[in-house]
Amino acid sequence: MNNYEDAKSAARERFEPSELAVARLSRRAAATLDRPRPSRRPMYAGFAALSVAAAALLFALRPTVTVSALAADTATTMQVSDDVALSYAGRGEVTTDGAHPRVSWELGTLDVEVTPNRGVDLVIETPEATVRVIGTGFTVARDALGSAVDVRHGIVAVRCGDGREGQLTAGQSMTCLPVRAAGMLARAKALAAGGAADADVLVALDAGLRLDASPPVRAELSARRIRTLSALGRDEEAAAAASAWLAGDETIRRAEVEDLAFAVAMRRADCATATRLAKTEAQAATAAACER
Image (tube, rainbow, N blue to C red):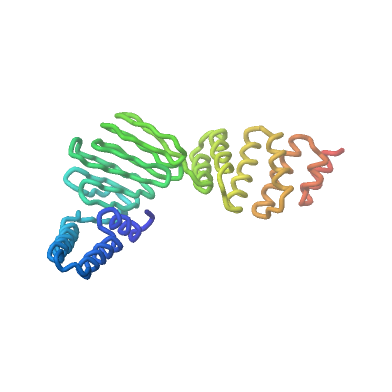
């Protein structure tokens, strides 16, 4: 669920009888009353009245559904029910009928406390993970790196979008990685900005390139991969990747990849390739010096 209206629609589908079902019931009752069977009409009329009454009772007894937006820059608390408390800084939505809260969490940190053994069926969904709990205390944090679940007490079942799943107990944690190429690109950027090892950045870039990606996202993933291979001293792989990339007709970030390929060629003393890739006077002079 990505917005308020989608959340309300999903809630109605879960807790209210559909208009189609009510219409079908009404048609059956009307058809029964119109049948030319005088001797049985009182019985059918009674059945029709009972059906209508049952439908009315179903509407009257349906759970009260509440859909609330969660949005705060600083830690904010919310008592969803007597047995579920949330503390959050970020954004998302919560839908609840009391015993079946559903949280769609988009970004930030969500802290959860659930009273155990009270029949609460709580589910939290992020773009990368589904977390289900009966009674426990845990935290869900979503950022560019993915969705991280940390358990304080109790047991939490986590299922990641990439197929990994597990049960976490107190002190355990699990991170579900992005499942879209753009998400993996954001993860690679966040890792690099945070000073992570180039090898870890490369893992994220390779994972992103294995996913379906729009041309701009694929171009940036490829350019960053070539740069990272170069930073790792894997110049032969960087040169091959740059050559393959430049052989295509991609124009996004082309100048950057050409500069990377030139620098790698010079380090490898591949003067012929450097001369071919030279685009500026300085590059041409450097390549010429290489050939002498």
